[in-house]
Image (cartoon, rainbow, N blue to C red; front, side, top):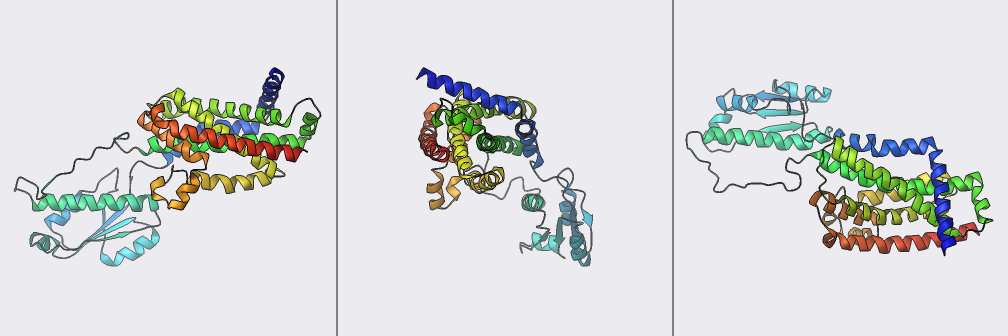
Length: 372
């Protein structure tokens, strides 16, 4: 037994030395957990910024002027007054993302209670600004109309007021969510790539056959690749969480760092085993890359990181319970966002233990058959 453990440790150190001599993979690891995380967190703005807005003011009233003056930087550029015939040519050229049309007698109809309509034209090809900006414009216009109508009354016409409190992310900062989700996705991606590439590299260089004639078993060879590559990803992800996410981005990941690392180890046990299985199925690196696309994309898109599990069809939710990424996202959000303890995340931990064991056994059987 001690000899088996010694063989697994020594073979694992061999994998680490091989990785250290591969500058391409080292560069990929460094980029993924530093620049990749930072760019993913900051590339999407927290809110709309410098959106181009034009206003067709056919009313020229006090209320229409109040509405036009309510749009100012940094969310919107200063509104550009245009005429109705200029709407289509301007939007065709991409000069404006939004065009607000205020009709004739708008103020008169508002004061008379006739509920007049405003027209908002949106360039929907600019998806990030189109979706968020429409909501901002509607809210700004509504606030200005309510203030104008209720001036002097001393109270709002609403019978009740809703006070919203955003827990765990008070300012709805996109970087807080994007950075952690990017880290989670990168952990899964790198674990599968490194483990699969280690096995493919052995096969292409012809060293795998040399190992098989040595007094080591297929189990020892596979276990060494699993623990060594998992250790590399754990170290890189831990440093990224401490220095990039908490340090550079200022994300208050207040949960237990040790508990997150424990859960990450269980997840890596599962996905590195999956990487071995994919490498046994593929014959070379290009085939491994194609398999990664087919496996990684559904796992990451349906794991709950992009869309909550509750919003998915029941069949998809049941199938994704068998994917390790689903439980990884679940306990990562609970620990890093909400500061959950083991009493909350023990179920995803148990799921990952079971899934990892099953994947390891299946991959070991596949690996042993491939080598015989």
